[in-house]
Length: 435
Image 1 (cartoon, rainbow, N blue to C red):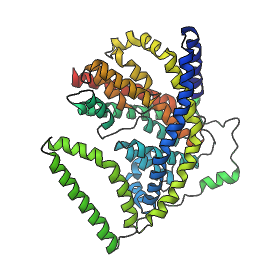
Image 2 (image 1 turned 90 degrees about the vertical axis):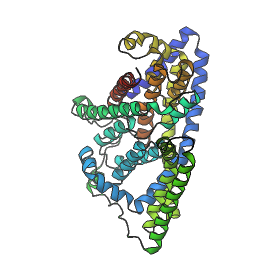
Image 3 (image 1 turned 135 degrees about the horizontal axis):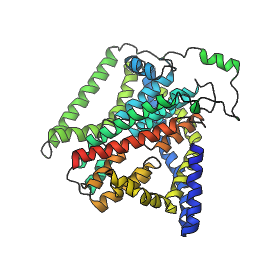
Image 4 (image 1 turned 30 degrees about the horizontal axis):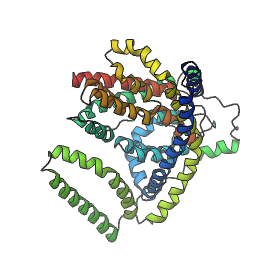
């Protein structure tokens, strides 16, 4: 299905541009997006190397083993085919935790690592396993508990009197999208249409490799009890951070409330605390953190090289489609139907672009806020849509590219249905809170 959608985007863009005189814009978009895709991958390499290295430190320090024990009942129920002590389980847990905390840049390296490890359990090369499909659906519609700070910053710059007013509607929307996508995954899994079938050009797994898959995975490293020096360093660091947090919080209270100041500080402190926290886990278990981090980070370069062709392919198709003007034509055609169900027509470009392009939808949201006002109903809907789901095609392209998966089976329909559920619940939540 992804092959046909990708082809349809390019075919439609070129054919439509041929009759509207926009061929020059489509041509320019193709080259610009190809360059932009490589630039985007280069920007991703740094965080990928950093967080894969930190993940290795945490793994050697016993954190992943501890978290896996706590989440084992839920994860075993969702992913029964993945051994609880397999590295894929630890990577998935860290990915989901980072997504819940709103740390998208940190979540992506963990997600890429999880897909690579899940592929080691794959008996049909190139075809997504049940675990991969479910993991993709959760990532494409991931629940984020933290306030959408990027959207709030744009709203504040546009003059909003309450930039974080869309936090609760966004949480409702993203929860609905995730629950729907997961349910659809389990529903479609039983359909013969999405059964696992070997690819015609894929290598056949040998008997030796099949036997190797049945070999239990090496267990995750357990934490080593802290000695007096480690205990002094770790607890002393935590005490200093707590004192620094309290000092900064007290300095902010003159300008804002305790609640607003705390939320703003938590959002600002999350990423540095995550980085230092993972290193402290290694220190507590007497891990040589620098060498361990560098050893784990080397994998980031390999993953980045694998995803470049996939990124170029999808971003070029989306850019050409938008530049041709066909997106605007679709908006005009859908307007009568969306208006009848209470969805503002001005927010339609957001809904259509959100699964295709994160940067594109963000730009459209900014334009809507400037044109209609950040606190208008249209502005509220557009802001909520931005956080209701992730960029479906980006997630599928990058994650499957990292694992060499060509057939995503029912991942795409499940993610798109989750997107629709997220958009519908975002609209309903905005009607509930803002009308």
